[in-house]
Length: 135
Image 1 (cartoon, rainbow, N blue to C red):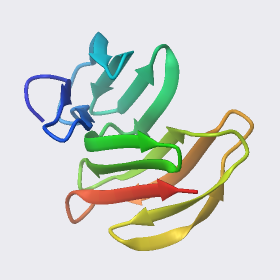
Image 2 (image 1 turned 180 degrees about the vertical axis):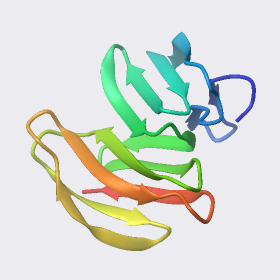
Image 3 (image 1 turned 90 degrees about the vertical axis):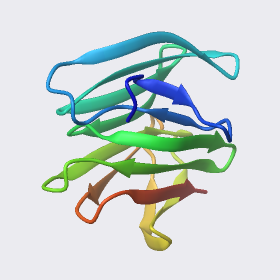
């Protein structure tokens, strides 16, 4: 990830986080599509908020690329320390079933909780992973 903790890509997607940092870093009030984004990141956790509301969290920290949201879900690329599995939580619609697809392979359907949070584990060995979560 570049020196910036959050960036808008040429396709208007969002990239954020830096799992290589040893100390907590954050960027606040980053304007994106009429919203204010906030990222907190380092090797232990990466968290993204939109207008103070939860969007994404990983433990340990990750770097996320080309993050997009639409009415059907989210899509992004993620990478982190190859020795770790990441616990990833994404904020979506309350009590809704979504299919989680990693590198074009469905890993199953997951229902969000009352708060709209969807949790899954991701093996980070083998480099950058493509994640699509859709209704």
